[in-house]
Length: 460
Ligand SMILES: Cc1ncc(COP(=O)(O)O)c(C=O)c1O
Image 1: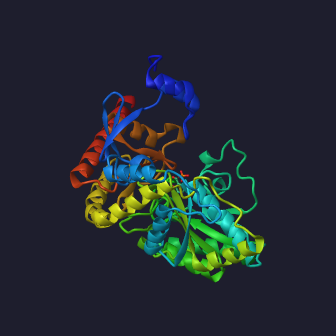
Image 2: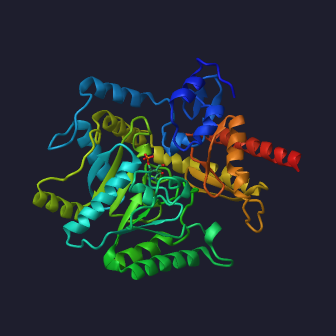
Image 3: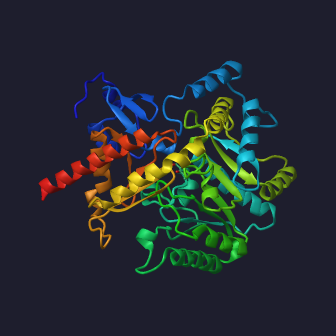
């Protein structure tokens, strides 16, 4: 595509390096420049209107025109634009936000550590876990376990937990010896013929138990899991999975880190995915919908026993030797606080519960499409797993890139979705979506699928 030399597209191609993008392909394809938004819709610089079917990156829960968040940011910028939280400093938004998070936390959470992104929250969790094990005199207990297809961010450490080849290739990852992976809890993909969902969960818990036994429980520190796996293909857990997994972890004194970066704040129909699935975590990471993405902020929430051990150790060492300049930025914290207040005052979780059946009904109906092997989801998150053969579940060859083709076709229909590993199309609209907007989203998705069917017929 040739761009006018002064166009936004040409200037983007000239200067911007894009994440998760084939940088050479970008030189000819160019960017989709988004210039505005209204509720669940965004507009490009040509005036086209799209349903943002992934809330940006699973994050803009309140959509793209929430003026109360703008006002919260403006007020804080006016009052006190910046102060850090190092060395006994604090600001009111940070205090109030921490208080609110602890009050609504999914488990016995006592304290909150603020950072700027989900990746930093995961990275902090890892460092804290190792610090904690050293502090309690268990320096050998350092291995951490995640699941294949997990997404836990892309810092050097988090990149070891994110078990997706595309986030490792070319970066010399993995390079550390402290990381292990177990099977993805995808009953559809990894269940054995005739195996019930419950039996699949039992088998996966036994696999985890076997791994911990083989490594030695005295060497295993923590297990990281998203309640619903997001970027790895939107995979809700099979029946009984977390109950069985937690029994194994408890037996071996292994910490549970719930990565609530996508699930947190109503996505699954409860405040936390942990509540939806009966998870009792020792540590919780959250980000994204914490501020509805209007400001970069994330948090690591810490259970009291872990905190107490860490605090004693800082007393011995003289300081807690880590911190980010912008961790607990007062403007981001003020925006997050306002976001949580809106979730409450607007009854957003009740709204999700009310509206989710319509979303899941329209999603499930796509299961009859010839390309869709499984239509799955919970609350306001869902996915279509694309297959070449619905009966055998055989996938298309990887180079067919069917999920990418479908999302491209949906874009032509004014719907933004995201292709995910495993030939999956992810759907995760803003939490504020109304019933008529759900219908608009799925009507466009149907038309996108029809475009791909038509192209396949033409090619045949
Ligand atoms: C479950 C999960 N954890 C961590 C992250 C990393 O968050 P960030 O992109 O803010 O660093 C993501 C991002 O999508 C995520 O989905």
